[in-house]
Image (cartoon, rainbow, N blue to C red; front, side, top):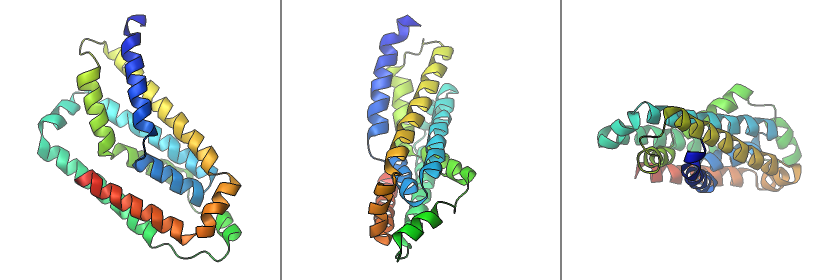
Length: 207
Protein backbone atom coordinates (compact mmCIF):
# COMPACT_ATOMS: atom_id res chain seq x y z
CA UNK A 1 0.00 0.00 0.00
CA UNK A 2 2.88 2.37 0.75
CA UNK A 3 3.98 2.25 -2.88
CA UNK A 4 0.73 4.02 -3.78
CA UNK A 5 1.15 6.73 -1.12
CA UNK A 6 2.22 9.41 -3.62
CA UNK A 7 -0.78 8.66 -5.83
CA UNK A 8 -3.10 8.73 -2.82
CA UNK A 9 -1.77 12.12 -1.65
CA UNK A 10 -2.34 13.61 -5.10
CA UNK A 11 -5.89 12.24 -5.13
CA UNK A 12 -6.57 13.46 -1.58
CA UNK A 13 -5.41 17.01 -2.39
CA UNK A 14 -7.34 17.12 -5.67
CA UNK A 15 -10.46 15.81 -3.94
CA UNK A 16 -10.24 18.34 -1.12
CA UNK A 17 -9.95 21.23 -3.59
CA UNK A 18 -12.92 19.88 -5.53
CA UNK A 19 -15.18 19.23 -2.54
CA UNK A 20 -14.35 22.58 -0.86
CA UNK A 21 -15.18 24.63 -3.96
CA UNK A 22 -18.73 26.07 -4.11
CA UNK A 23 -21.17 23.97 -6.10
CA UNK A 24 -24.52 22.16 -5.96
CA UNK A 25 -23.46 20.07 -2.93
CA UNK A 26 -22.56 23.14 -0.87
CA UNK A 27 -25.70 25.01 -1.96
CA UNK A 28 -28.02 22.18 -0.92
CA UNK A 29 -26.27 21.59 2.44
CA UNK A 30 -26.46 25.32 3.19
CA UNK A 31 -30.15 25.41 2.25
CA UNK A 32 -31.06 22.37 4.37
CA UNK A 33 -28.97 23.55 7.34
CA UNK A 34 -30.81 26.87 7.49
CA UNK A 35 -34.28 25.68 6.54
CA UNK A 36 -34.49 22.23 8.14
CA UNK A 37 -31.85 22.20 10.85
CA UNK A 38 -28.87 20.10 11.86
CA UNK A 39 -30.33 16.59 11.72
CA UNK A 40 -31.72 17.10 8.24
CA UNK A 41 -28.49 18.68 7.01
CA UNK A 42 -26.44 15.79 8.42
CA UNK A 43 -28.60 13.27 6.54
CA UNK A 44 -28.28 15.42 3.42
CA UNK A 45 -24.50 15.36 3.90
CA UNK A 46 -24.59 11.58 4.27
CA UNK A 47 -26.50 11.42 0.99
CA UNK A 48 -23.85 13.56 -0.70
CA UNK A 49 -21.20 11.15 0.59
CA UNK A 50 -23.15 8.15 -0.72
CA UNK A 51 -23.39 9.83 -4.11
CA UNK A 52 -19.61 9.54 -4.41
CA UNK A 53 -19.99 5.77 -4.67
CA UNK A 54 -22.00 6.23 -7.88
CA UNK A 55 -19.10 8.04 -9.55
CA UNK A 56 -16.52 5.60 -8.20
CA UNK A 57 -18.60 2.60 -9.32
CA UNK A 58 -18.99 3.63 -12.94
CA UNK A 59 -15.31 4.55 -13.11
CA UNK A 60 -14.31 1.12 -11.82
CA UNK A 61 -16.76 -0.57 -14.21
CA UNK A 62 -15.40 1.32 -17.19
CA UNK A 63 -18.53 3.39 -17.77
CA UNK A 64 -16.39 6.50 -17.35
CA UNK A 65 -14.60 5.59 -20.57
CA UNK A 66 -17.94 5.23 -22.36
CA UNK A 67 -19.09 8.63 -21.09
CA UNK A 68 -15.85 10.27 -22.19
CA UNK A 69 -16.21 8.79 -25.69
CA UNK A 70 -19.92 9.57 -26.08
CA UNK A 71 -20.72 13.31 -26.02
CA UNK A 72 -24.41 12.59 -26.65
CA UNK A 73 -24.72 10.38 -23.57
CA UNK A 74 -22.82 12.84 -21.41
CA UNK A 75 -25.00 15.72 -22.68
CA UNK A 76 -28.13 13.76 -21.79
CA UNK A 77 -26.71 13.26 -18.30
CA UNK A 78 -26.03 17.02 -18.04
CA UNK A 79 -29.57 17.92 -19.07
CA UNK A 80 -31.07 15.58 -16.45
CA UNK A 81 -28.83 17.08 -13.76
CA UNK A 82 -29.61 20.63 -14.89
CA UNK A 83 -33.35 19.93 -14.84
CA UNK A 84 -33.14 18.58 -11.28
CA UNK A 85 -31.21 21.63 -10.04
CA UNK A 86 -33.60 23.96 -11.86
CA UNK A 87 -36.57 22.18 -10.25
CA UNK A 88 -35.14 22.77 -6.76
CA UNK A 89 -34.29 26.36 -7.71
CA UNK A 90 -37.87 27.11 -8.79
CA UNK A 91 -39.18 25.59 -5.56
CA UNK A 92 -36.89 27.88 -3.55
CA UNK A 93 -37.94 30.94 -5.58
CA UNK A 94 -41.55 30.31 -4.61
CA UNK A 95 -40.76 30.77 -0.89
CA UNK A 96 -43.11 33.09 1.00
CA UNK A 97 -42.17 35.72 3.56
CA UNK A 98 -41.72 34.55 7.17
CA UNK A 99 -43.48 36.74 9.71
CA UNK A 100 -41.94 35.01 12.75
CA UNK A 101 -38.32 33.73 12.36
CA UNK A 102 -38.43 31.69 15.59
CA UNK A 103 -41.68 29.98 14.61
CA UNK A 104 -40.43 29.27 11.09
CA UNK A 105 -37.26 27.68 12.46
CA UNK A 106 -39.26 25.35 14.73
CA UNK A 107 -41.75 24.48 11.99
CA UNK A 108 -39.09 23.80 9.37
CA UNK A 109 -37.28 21.37 11.66
CA UNK A 110 -40.16 18.88 11.60
CA UNK A 111 -41.17 19.09 7.93
CA UNK A 112 -38.91 16.64 6.14
CA UNK A 113 -38.06 12.99 6.81
CA UNK A 114 -34.52 11.69 7.22
CA UNK A 115 -34.89 9.52 4.13
CA UNK A 116 -35.99 12.44 1.99
CA UNK A 117 -32.98 14.46 3.16
CA UNK A 118 -30.66 11.51 2.44
CA UNK A 119 -32.21 11.05 -1.01
CA UNK A 120 -31.90 14.75 -1.85
CA UNK A 121 -28.19 14.85 -0.97
CA UNK A 122 -27.59 11.62 -2.91
CA UNK A 123 -29.32 12.84 -6.07
CA UNK A 124 -27.62 16.24 -6.03
CA UNK A 125 -24.19 14.63 -5.90
CA UNK A 126 -24.89 11.64 -8.14
CA UNK A 127 -26.35 13.92 -10.85
CA UNK A 128 -23.61 16.53 -10.53
CA UNK A 129 -21.70 16.71 -13.86
CA UNK A 130 -18.94 18.62 -12.08
CA UNK A 131 -18.33 15.51 -9.98
CA UNK A 132 -18.59 13.35 -13.11
CA UNK A 133 -15.89 15.39 -14.86
CA UNK A 134 -13.72 15.27 -11.75
CA UNK A 135 -13.91 11.49 -11.47
CA UNK A 136 -13.46 11.05 -15.21
CA UNK A 137 -10.19 12.96 -15.06
CA UNK A 138 -9.19 11.34 -11.78
CA UNK A 139 -9.55 7.74 -12.97
CA UNK A 140 -8.20 8.37 -16.48
CA UNK A 141 -5.36 10.80 -15.79
CA UNK A 142 -4.28 10.64 -12.14
CA UNK A 143 -4.74 6.98 -11.27
CA UNK A 144 -2.38 4.58 -12.97
CA UNK A 145 -4.26 1.89 -14.96
CA UNK A 146 -2.03 -0.69 -13.27
CA UNK A 147 -3.17 0.35 -9.79
CA UNK A 148 -4.97 -2.69 -8.29
CA UNK A 149 -8.73 -2.40 -8.16
CA UNK A 150 -8.67 -2.98 -4.39
CA UNK A 151 -6.53 0.14 -4.00
CA UNK A 152 -8.85 2.11 -6.29
CA UNK A 153 -11.80 1.00 -4.16
CA UNK A 154 -9.93 2.28 -1.10
CA UNK A 155 -9.52 5.65 -2.87
CA UNK A 156 -13.27 5.69 -3.45
CA UNK A 157 -14.03 4.85 0.19
CA UNK A 158 -11.70 7.60 1.34
CA UNK A 159 -13.30 10.22 -0.93
CA UNK A 160 -16.82 9.23 0.17
CA UNK A 161 -15.84 9.45 3.85
CA UNK A 162 -13.96 12.73 3.39
CA UNK A 163 -16.93 14.23 1.55
CA UNK A 164 -19.33 13.13 4.27
CA UNK A 165 -17.10 14.50 7.05
CA UNK A 166 -16.60 17.85 5.27
CA UNK A 167 -20.28 18.49 4.67
CA UNK A 168 -21.23 17.19 8.12
CA UNK A 169 -18.84 19.79 9.57
CA UNK A 170 -20.50 22.49 7.46
CA UNK A 171 -23.91 21.23 8.59
CA UNK A 172 -22.97 21.60 12.25
CA UNK A 173 -21.64 25.13 11.71
CA UNK A 174 -24.42 26.38 9.44
CA UNK A 175 -27.23 24.93 11.56
CA UNK A 176 -26.22 26.77 14.74
CA UNK A 177 -29.23 28.68 16.14
CA UNK A 178 -27.61 32.10 15.70
CA UNK A 179 -26.71 31.31 12.10
CA UNK A 180 -30.21 30.05 11.31
CA UNK A 181 -31.79 33.12 12.96
CA UNK A 182 -29.60 35.39 10.86
CA UNK A 183 -30.74 33.74 7.65
CA UNK A 184 -34.36 33.40 8.75
CA UNK A 185 -34.59 37.14 9.38
CA UNK A 186 -34.10 37.49 5.66
CA UNK A 187 -36.54 34.60 5.28
CA UNK A 188 -37.89 34.41 1.77
CA UNK A 189 -35.01 36.52 0.43
CA UNK A 190 -32.54 33.85 1.53
CA UNK A 191 -34.68 31.12 -0.04
CA UNK A 192 -34.96 33.06 -3.27
CA UNK A 193 -31.23 33.76 -3.25
CA UNK A 194 -30.53 30.04 -2.97
CA UNK A 195 -33.08 29.50 -5.74
CA UNK A 196 -31.19 31.88 -8.02
CA UNK A 197 -27.91 30.10 -7.16
CA UNK A 198 -29.43 26.71 -7.99
CA UNK A 199 -30.81 28.01 -11.29
CA UNK A 200 -27.43 29.51 -12.19
CA UNK A 201 -25.77 26.20 -11.33
CA UNK A 202 -28.32 24.44 -13.54
CA UNK A 203 -27.43 26.74 -16.45
CA UNK A 204 -23.72 26.28 -15.78
CA UNK A 205 -24.14 22.50 -15.69
CA UNK A 206 -25.91 22.45 -19.07
CA UNK A 207 -23.53 24.90 -20.75
